[in-house]
Amino acid sequence: MEKHFSFGNSPLAKGAVCVFVLFLLASAVFPLCAWDDPAVLWKRNLAGMNPHFSPDDSIIVTFTGVDGQVEFAKTLTGERLRYSKFLYQTNKGFAFVDSGRYFVFRIEEFKQGVLLYDTKRALEGDVTPVATIQVDSGGMPGWVSYGFDVSPNGKYLLFEMGAWVNHIFLFEMPSGKLIKNFRLSNYGGTGDIKFLTDSTIVVGYAICEPGCYSCENPRREYWIILYNINQEKVIDTIYAKARKCPKITTPPTRPTEPPYCAPIGPSDDRWGGFYRVPKFTTSTTGRYILYGYVPQEYIDKDVPNPPLWYRLYDVVEKRIVWDKQFDYTECTAWGFFKFGPDDQYILLHGTHIIDAKTGDLIYIWRKENNAWVPFRTKYFDFTKDGKYIVALAEIVDGTHYVRRNIYNEAVNGVPEGGLTAGGTIVPNPADGIAKLEVDIGGNTNAKITISTMQGTEVKMIFEGILFEGKHIFEIPTQELSAGTYFVNVQTSFGREIFKLVVTR
Image (cartoon, rainbow, N blue to C red):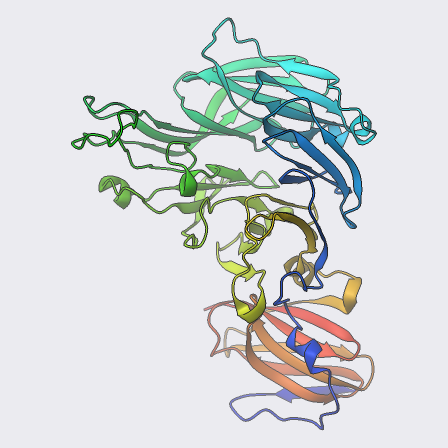
């Protein structure tokens, strides 16, 4: 038998209420505590800092850039598999290649290449490099290594080197065979380089010449371009800004201090702190690029410490999807992002989730009293399916932890914990009424609420007894702001969550 409920502006009808577990209802949507959060699988002080999931997500590798410490641990349990100390001092980069069979390190002591290691042998304690992949600098001692990246299929490695005129080297992995090298003669400076697809790379440069007190207008530029490796040409200029630094009228306080020049983009060591973040982040599908920039109004006025804004760029349609500024008041270097599965959402600093379609902040992992959790960090990663997040709680005590991604569970549904996803509800645009249909397997106490995606309850739909069968609830949404909400159906049989999308 199907029951039909309608709730307009009249008071909510309540059935006979039986004893209900209020504690479970209070935490029905999202956890509000940190280490006591049941979403946390484990926490442990692993060696090193920067965590990476293996390509199959079965193990986590953590490493440090100070003393070469590396540790391997199981993803779901945190069980230590191997601790090793490599024979060098400063690690400058890490990546798995060839489906995780190998990994590479770029180190400070070896400036013009990377070292290749066998993953299985490293897990057994053998940390002897199996190969050295080295760039031929052509006898130019001024060359320095800017960065490297591994293609999405793990078969190619790009290495960027140069001295203002940047050279890109493409290697086959794991053989280390040099396939080609090419130069970007019109670009230079401190660069970021990432694969977007196996044949296309994104290159970003920031230039800020230090100049001197007697010099006028040092060079200041910021570029992000899309480059086709096969065609060896720039196929799109995503962002380009050039502006001379203003004339210096005040001598530096120290003889060695270069004149100050305000940044026009992120990620240059001279600016440090807040600006030392990646210039851009590539999406998992290769469709989007998220990049940081300084708005023109601040550049025109040479504001000393301008805010960073972020844009999502669609490389297929060649358009800006959205343009946002995110709150950075409580954290320096606030700009480390990773895209979720199929580019549904973007993870910011391991704790904040952004809707990739709108740029709206839709979920924050929180602690007691709804305060923002202090575990935000630039050292984080998450599994390819988005189910688990690993991060370093560097602000708290330097502990690594793995937790379930509750947002991912609510949106996509997972079998564990009695939580199921009930689909998406869209109101009728004519009257703003959304219809919720629930199928109850037996007589039960029930509570149905609407909450924001941060877990704040905004409306009670029903509380009382529901009998076995299908029930339809008519939910007015006129009082709700446009956005995405959760409709939480809590019964003694489990919890079902629907997405409610309200548009105006």
